[in-house]
Image (cartoon, one colour):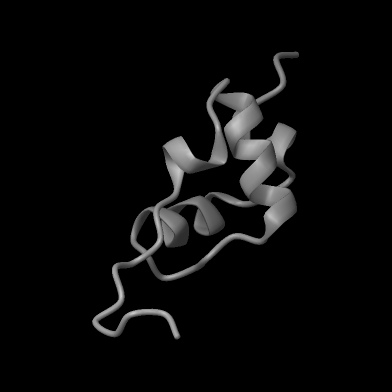
Length: 56
């Protein structure tokens, strides 16, 4: 039996759909698992929203 993407990440399809639709922000552990699966850095996959106010 082949191990699926969802099994490796230990998430449901609903979780992935929510991430894709910007309705859920994955935690650090899940973000790292996704990056590792695709052999990318977390920065290549996820971006911070640009803030209207500069950091103080």
